Length: 235
Image 1 (cartoon, rainbow, N blue to C red):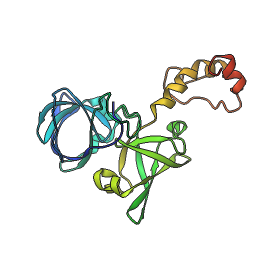
Image 2 (image 1 turned 45 degrees about the vertical axis):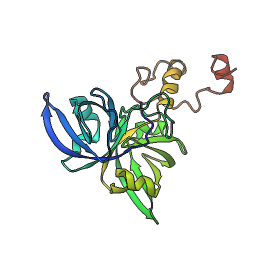
Image 3 (image 1 turned 90 degrees about the vertical axis):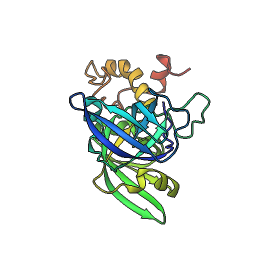
């Protein structure tokens, strides 16, 4: 579990084949790893990876074929900068939001605008994921906890403060770059819990009841305060 508050950046120092279509990454950190443990979880550009070897200023991690196919880690090259965050402990401050390190989709930078040290980015994503992205909600881009400023048809906008631009890869992103996107997990769980009622109202035609696909538009389906009270969601 992470919060989306990066410790800083590291750099890819080695990329080696591992287990078929997987990779082994060696990452040099820009900071000292205190009390490191082999087997601990470390977020690399938002992807939760297991440290298989740790030194004072670096670690190694295997990337499975599944992770390669679903994230932007497959675009990394030697020398590339990556955002790093170690897993939180129960006594840590939750400075960002709840981030699992499990990537939902890969987005593309569609626009970048500099504003006196600040940046605004427009990120394009597949439309099926837009239902989880809400204005002023939280989202993780390459493992960085950010606030959504605006949403549109297949895109959303975020602002980057100078500090975040300096200590993470967000300040280095340009139009066309691919970025890892983790959606707010709370919204996904709410949709999952509501899916039996959504399925009932849609006459059994809910393609999302297995936890995947696009949920139907229920804006005119009868889900209102009376419905939620009747089925125990409100009291």
